[in-house]
Image 1: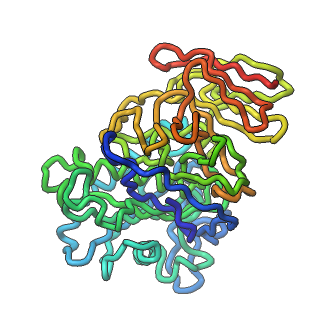
Image 2: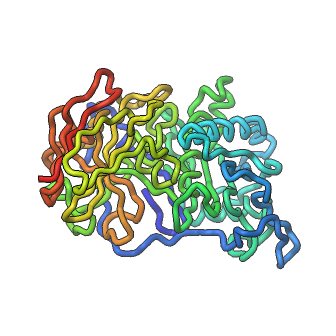
Image 3: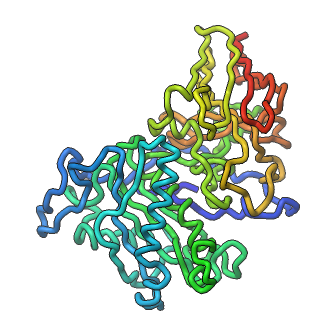
Length: 450
């Protein structure tokens, strides 16, 4: 779910956590909308670094001028909830835990970006008391973020013209889970009313982003008390959550499913369509909290961020004529394309084609795939066709990445079967899955323009 205040949120959706045999409602489709998202963006002049505040002399701790363009800095604040001592929270979230969290997030992003995005802690790990400790609403979370940021940037930094996270710099406020709040716990989803993370978004996407802030749940009494710590969900889940929120800081939107009445491939301006967020658990920007491990970033999102190598991309348009394309699974190290873009010559719509298979180190513990995510939608591994909403979309936020579901409205799936043909809504573009190789390592596509 997205909050169109200055933030984007990750919300624990019960839809993705139910047992495969349980009854589930149809996808929760957002109503059409017209307004563009209102985003928080640092008003700091990103061409200058390390300047002093004009207000109270507090130095704006930002990205140093010598920092590599591949390296993003993270300034960390650990929050102490109400009725919990800071001494206890220091045991739950040690500096070594913070450093391990950032290291694992950095390793993930380095792998996903081909070494073009890395994260490192900057400055001391600061700690704050949270007053009433509230974090159930967007404004309550922003209040905690303001408190946390003041430790690094001084008071009133949030609306300041010359303070706050600078280019490739991020503020991370870590908030511990409550007792019993973990998958399978007695109070699952209760810490912040179901939210596990929150992040600001700039107006444009890119790895050389203007920076931003994040709020993430991480650590807690159950993980600490179990003696396993990093083997417990209160710690392990923090990697996926922070990796997801930092992606929002770089301008990436959510991934989900484009759900249209009647024909699956409806127009992005249609009032009969909606965006079902969270129904793409195989993408970091979908429901990343549904997995053990951290799901890969989709090829469309990598391309938007500017980290997908040209060797892994293939564009097919009508001028190229009918084409046979070999597609490789997205996380394989190969020179073949892992992402194909095909353009409908009549509508101009661009479709992203990707092969998704089981990933090393990632599994879905709540239910096996294929997953009956709702009464009329099944998530599977295989060939996906997706689109990315443009600036004029009325039912999906600009930049939102949405799978085009296959099949009848009452029984749709996320992927195409071998031998199946996808036909765009104009009929002027056809994508056929000729075959899928052993182990879903590769596939052959036939793209035609009738």
